Image (cartoon, rainbow, N blue to C red; front, top):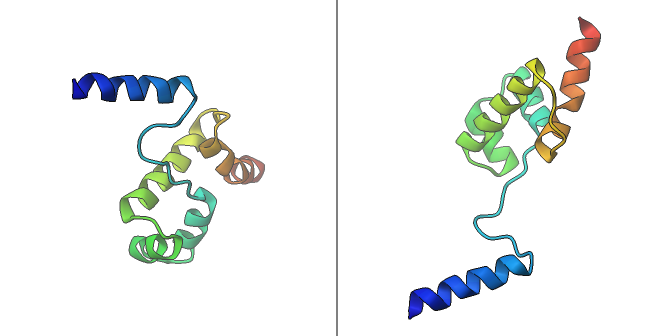
Length: 91
C-alpha cells in the first residue's frame, strides 16, 4: 500500500514537471582551468568554489574533452566556449 502511494506521488510530480532527484551543481570550468594554470591545488580550487574535489576534477575533464569535439548546446558546453575559442584562435 505504501509503495503504491509513493509511486502515485512520483507520477503526479513528474506530470506537473517537477525535477526529481539530487540538484545539479554548476561549476565554471573556465574558472577551474584558470586556477589550475595559476598553480592552485585541487583542494584549494574545490574549497574556493564550494564544491567537492571530485566535482572540480570532473568539470575540468569535461571541459578538456569538449576541446576535441563539438560543443553540445547545454549549460556545461556553454562554460567551455571561451576556452574552445581561445584554443582555436591561437592555433
